[in-house]
Image 1 (tube, helix red, strand yellow):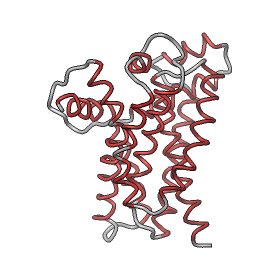
Image 2 (tube, helix red, strand yellow):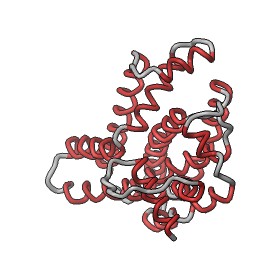
Image 3 (cartoon, rainbow, N blue to C red):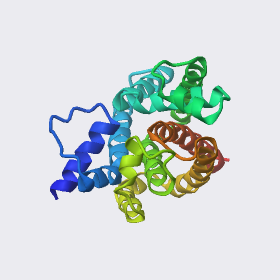
Image 4 (spheres, one colour):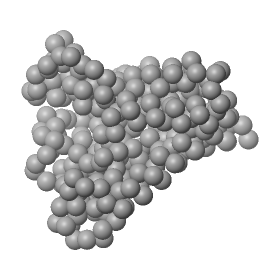
Length: 252
């Protein structure tokens, strides 16, 4: 039980900026449970953002509410995955050989491709949030979107090869097996009770992960921490678009 709790707190420390004033041990058991808890942390973060939206939707204009929710979404994650998104964009945009792309990804400076990728990502997320708020379908889908994007990270960590035998993603992969992926699905049962469109999101997530995993293998020979972080950001955007498509088809 201690390993489960410490794993959850490690996941919370790694995936969010929520205060966790506890020093958790890092070992095979706790790191394994940390990855299993990725979707649970996603449910928590998405739930906080959704709750803020429910409390403020009667007092704020819709565009301002959408901007506030997006800002809270970014703030709760600390921009960690956005950093990976920008690093990957800079590396891919360089059109350089593989070794040069790795060097660009490790560079702490952000290039023009990374900035453009960040701007367009946030614009699209904000626009989709605004469209969904305008549609008046509530925010019950939001925790599920955030959780499923982090389930995508678990899928990549378990199934995709590490690009290099170094880095955090490689270290985590040493402790993971396919059964850990099954454990990570358990918290999603809560999200499935919140929103009736959840089967559509699961179906939509599959081609994204397959395509992204194949692309990462071709472009970088596998995954690393930045590539997994970029997958979370891209997965959130893809799932936001999927919610909007679901609503559009459901309402004819």
